Image (cartoon, rainbow, N blue to C red; front, side, top):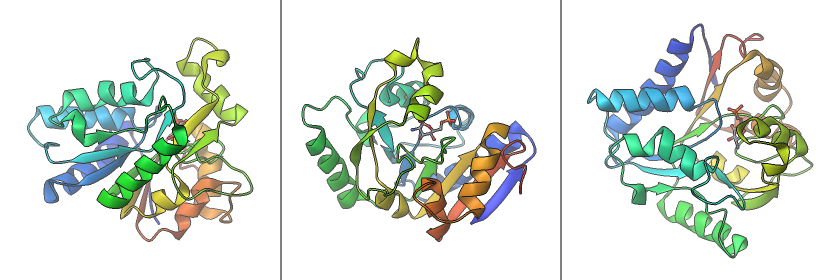
Length: 241
Ligand code: GLP
């Protein structure tokens, strides 16, 4: 793992954006795996800014998002489809047909998981998978437990994850109880992984994930087995590095 601690927000965002724009420039038909959550918001804003300055084009890029809530209407302000449209897609030159987010409202969720996996199998692997990390070590919505699932699947969200994400909703009751997420094997098939970790509240989980034992109790620890991972930490999250 290549682990870097950046000493300013600007350096953090600039480094992440630099890795993505370098890839997209050298490989205009790149396949990007994308993530949601508060962590990549600054990165997406930077990519939009660079696009507006004519520094990067996403015209040939295809994207695959990690996860989506089950049961939130696609147009809901907190659906991950809305998040991606608002933070990135509608501000750059990517056609929405080239952007993929699991459909958390599919009539048959199991079929939707199979469809997503088939698409990733046929078109993948992704060139770069962007990841954040949950306070409990989850990646995508692969929650800690006694096992991990390889493919895309429906997952009941841990209470701590619903509480952590309640800040985006009016109340905890409104936070969905389930999500669709890419599985651990799909994430591990990415050619490169870019893991972003921000904030002093993530310092301990960063230490566990990056230097602790590889265990399903901390799904992000599995990334230690991947041959090409870049981890960017801000000063708060990088306290132990
Ligand atoms: C969310 C997402 C993850 C994200 C994580 C951390 O629930 N499913 O992909 O990495 O939780 O979110 P944040 O960056 O807001 O701390």
